[in-house]
Length: 179
Image (cartoon, rainbow, N blue to C red; front, side):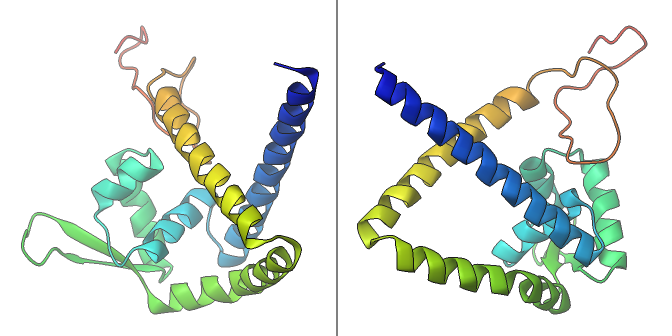
């Protein structure tokens, strides 16, 4: 690898890290204003991108145990952010939907950012440049997901901590830490 490529790689890596930090900061503030934690916010994002989903699908997407998902759904339902209903053809399953009020409240917070970002980005970059950026982000997201799965497969070095966005990974059982 040439020194020019190394320099570009370092600048790109720093830009991606800085962008991710800005996204994390924005998510924290959005969660604060909605009165939820960051995992709850991610759940709401998933629900707003789909008409309905099963708790098991949320468990897989969020990397949470089914018990943790049930607790989260209880909390979000109590806050009026989602509803649960029986599956129309399988009585053993439940479907989860975001409420219209939750969608409206969330969109009111994020719409100014979406509109401002779209306007400024479209003014600055050509369609061809934006195609390249979209390709980079899509490609990099795939790599990121591969490594999320790799990390989820690894056991944590100590007892699980509570709170935050912690995914479960492999579970330890017993006093010796064996599985």
